[in-house]
Amino acid sequence: MQIGSYQLPNKLILAPMAGISDRPFRGICKHFGAGLAVSEMVASNPALRDNKKTLLKADHDGETGLRSVQIVGTDPKHMADAAIYNVQRGAQIIDINMGCPAKKVCAVAAGSALLRDADLVKKILDAVVSAVDVPVTLKIRTGWDTESRNAVAIAQIAQASGIAALTVHGRTRACKFEGQAEYETIKQVKQMVSIPVIANGDIDSAEKAQFVLNVTGADALMIGRAAQGNPWLFKEIENFINSGKVIQKPTVTEIYAILTGHLEKLYSFYGDVTGVRIARKHISWYFKHLDFIGQDIRSKINQAAQPNQQMVLIQSAFTQ
Image (cartoon, rainbow, N blue to C red):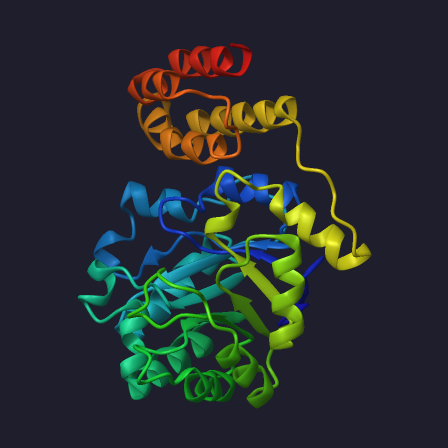
């Protein structure tokens, strides 16, 4: 899988998920085999550029592998300036968000709302590509709704604008994350452009990953929600693609080590108060793979306010 001049170690990419794909999570997913991990989306609004939350989203300090930052917005100049700014801060790839279905993003005509305005799409892509000397990638959905799937047309605009790789999520904006992703549109996109195409949507197992590659002909896969509390999924998929064999899931002891290691990184990255708060959702996702942990201990963990309290409760949950 090639993005511009960069050769990825495999075909697996962690999706840019708001509030999730931070530096700690990107690092863990890379450890388990993600060939690339894209940062959560960063606003292009210059007024937010030096905001602490914005800076944390694109913090790559000490991160291994390629550094890809996703930017979001509707103003071509703001988007170009945001690309320049993030490249100056170390981004090696700039990704453009035209796939987010969130109401607050679409309400300002950003994210997947841009798919309704092909002319503006072209202006943004042209502005960003010409502003930086690193590869620029694009993430889209299949269209605004099922009656206006225009991913092929947007893909052709992207290729003409110099986009280095294109990710297509197999749902429209109207679908949000409901129902099943469809892969026929991704297959059509792949057949109509020569740039690398990355398939995204409902890839939640090694077998499903191979199926999506076979059906779409995509060059790579992007995995989002299925990696939450399940970062070893990348290792499972890579092994299955390479050997056709399904490897064993991590043991309870291994999950405990992965989880506590993840939490320590969150505390260090965000500080005690915010780290504990952000850790709660990750703990919940890890616990989905552990049916022996009762609701009482889960509730206590969610009420813990300090890292040591959270850690002690998690240890008791695994040893009860």
